[in-house]
Length: 37
Image (cartoon, rainbow, N blue to C red; front, top):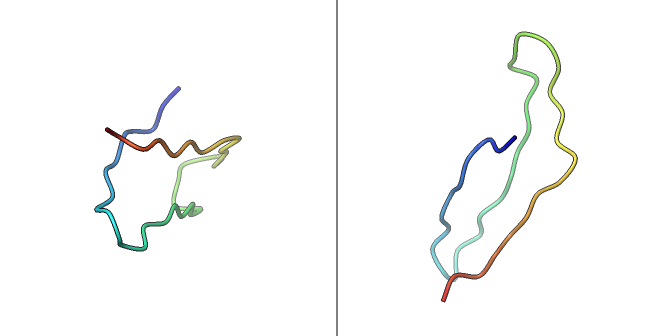
């Protein structure tokens, strides 16, 4: 299950943040960064 696809501008400091703002569990077992051509 994917939670989304998000673009970062080149040269900026993008990051991934998980929070506990949910109706149950928050689980992420992987994060993938891909460079787009």
